[in-house]
Image (cartoon, rainbow, N blue to C red; front, side, top):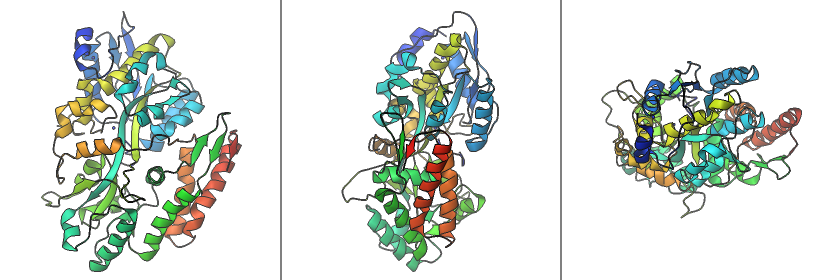
Length: 440
């Protein structure tokens, strides 16, 4: 889960036959083994206890509290530079290329390839490269549109099926009620921007057969997305609001926004988490607005993996891979993943990447302030994510560059058409200075 911002095994053989979504794996440990694991997800002690119950010869140490996002990755990078990294670590999909490029992760294909069919094809593509597998998918963030049906009905506005209709609704709603906006644009959120690129069919990064990279951030599709939102901002039809900040949370609590583009984890972490006690607001979920009427393209926002690092001793790599696989594919592991991320809930509050997510009761649990089985809806959207989107090894730098440019444009100091052109130039220069063969 991309909550940087917030914040996705004992008779082992007999147990595994009934609980693993894929082919049962076995531990290599005939004697006691201890693994280290770094994660920022909630209730890791529940995950560890579940694994150790099935594999009593393997002990997993409690993860340190290193935060998430940039704070976590700084600790991880420093530790691996010194050869003291964990055996298994959480890594978001968009950061995998960074660690793969630095040769920080171990190819675990021989231990986990049997799980390929347990995940959507596009998800497995995210953890694979040239026949090698560098991580086990943990959670994903298939995207949809969260909205308040009663408000749209009040103003006779249709649920927007296209981005053109979304823009029309945004103008009409704010005109009818200046205290509300259809939604907001977050100039501090590069991840959402990349997800919008993804849904529109853009491929801003492409690795070539010879290993070089092509960066196309200012391509026509990317510019279409950027200028669409820039126009809405200039018209005052949507608010400008840095997401996952205190002010943003207050704005959700006071019902400033009628709709929000979100991921499978968003109903809990972007709506319910901020509404005041006793709120009667009701939300629903539908597919993202489409650039082409009648299309069904989705996207992904966030999600993580569990990867085995180069610092794992060779004799425990198999056990480390087993841990990464079990916690993300077993029925008991998925139950913990999907349980609420609270002390009482005892779970991690994730939207699991594994297709078996629907096999546990928690999948159909109601979400406060939302109608219907929204997990089932987001599962449908997960099947509609374009499969070939690639991340670059410089996602952190891209975020730094584009956030600066978007903030300037939102403040009226730069035209929206220049945001991606400037970012492209900066990123190409950075990648070349870092030793990559890059063309723009």
